[in-house]
Image 1: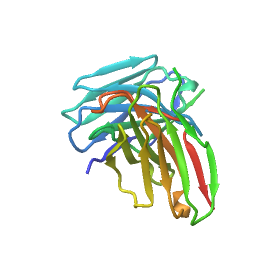
Image 2: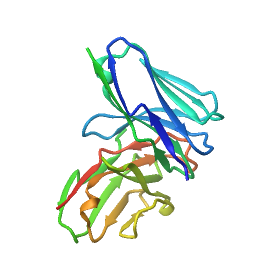
Image 3: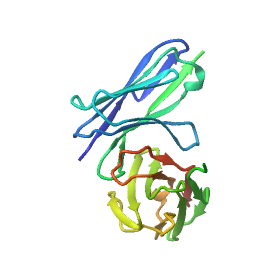
Image 4: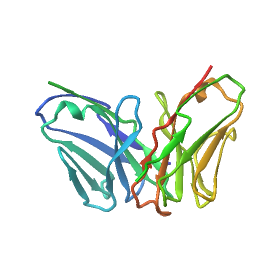
Length: 110
Length: 114
């Protein structure tokens, strides 16, 4: 059974600092998704990573995928308050099924 | 381009009742997946429909069922509601069959069971 682990589960950052969220998964997959969720809201798609070595960047966020290590990272550069949210990674299985990590609650303090 | 829509947005039911939730995917998308989100269990996959066929099912009891119509709209039904069914139910819409496409989530239906 596929397990997806995120760490840390809670991250309190100062504005302007850098940090990385890690997403490990237990069985082979070449599909990794990152989502953002604001309180009381739905999931917003951030990145879709579909091959080993894939790297994508949008603003202050950069995501990468290492399928051999079964690891994806979400790197935050020079954090700003607007990035405060919960971030989920999800691994694709058969068809369009996604298995989600527990989520990382990010709080950016000014 | 309109996004994924879900109705109703909020529901309050009592134990033992049944409920039907609806999801309309993005135009042209043929895959609809359903997820349950709770503080304790996180986001859990319920089932996926593609072209009116259920392709995948998660580990939920038979009280949870769904279907998809020819226009790709999907419904899920929960019978004999239990307190533990209180959750945010999210549907996701995707274009392709093999899962290599972006999945877009609707705003969710928040179900409260009293």
